[in-house]
Length: 211
Ligand code: HEM
Image (cartoon, rainbow, N blue to C red; front, side, top):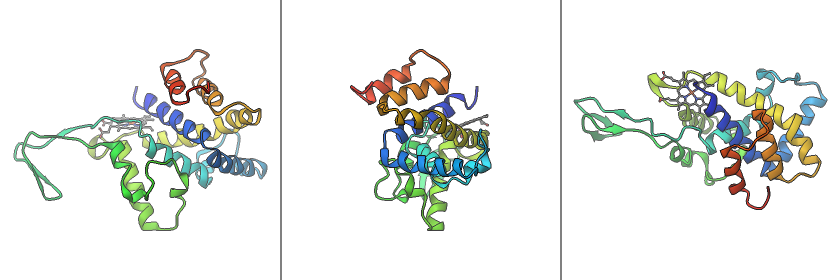
């Protein structure tokens, strides 16, 4: 079914990036705490409320940028008469796709695109932000076959990351669990399952000795 594995992958990789980065989760917890303490959000949170939490939104964007869920080239075939891309002649029948992971390392994102750094989205340069958003948008494809579920995906991500962090991950880190333990339990919580999945075994490889 469209949008299930892609969204689940985005949730898992964004959550992992957040909880393995204390400076990031420190800021996110502070924002969540303030929003809850001042009743700025409903529980469960509404999408328009989540969109007003700037650091949460930056974490969601950065999670998608750093780990685009669809890594295929999504090739298209050039028409029989051929085509031109930025002045390059493309012969008819050539298959052309784009490398999403490579695109998200573009220098438009700054000097450190390999780092998960939500702060890059919290700048005032409107022109630069607009280029960043246009580039990030390509994780949903482009043209007539572009993802039809983008607004639903963004709503899900905003709400799930907030809810899982607020109700589960943050209290768990407060109880002194390691980030690896939290990651594993958070994934199980999100999936509502109690058995390990291949992704959890992969996580054990990513966090050796911590699970
Ligand atoms: C983070 C989450 C998601 C990502 C990264 C994503 C990404 C993509 C990509 C890359 C494509 C192919 C675009 C192309 O070939 O040009 C696609 C197609 C599609 N997506 Fe998503 N998607 C996500 C979530 C969703 C959700 C939640 C839904 C539905 C509720 C959905 C529905 C669809 C549909 C129906 C297509 C096929 C469009 C077509 O061929 O006309 N997607 N998605």
